[in-house]
Length: 103
Image: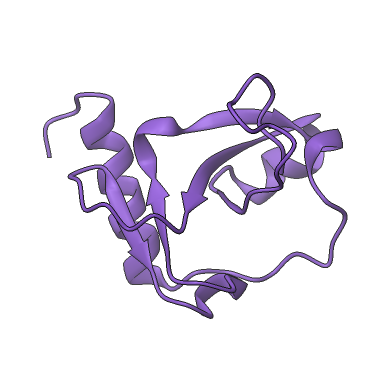
């Protein structure tokens, strides 16, 4: 994906698509959490091990940066795969933490 207006926006970056599959089919955009290989622990960061969901390097899901992206900014598939249930639950909790929902 490319994040418009983001520093270094020419660099392709991995992201975790968190929107529902049915929404992804019907909408022109997807909801994503950007990933980074800079491993800075934080309450809103979730580690994703190398290989999980198809990531090439150990990464952090930066859940405080959840955003929508037009599908035209996504690289064409095949997409890398799904993360495990425990990672998805951790991402959900981190997103709630980032928006101030008590958990």
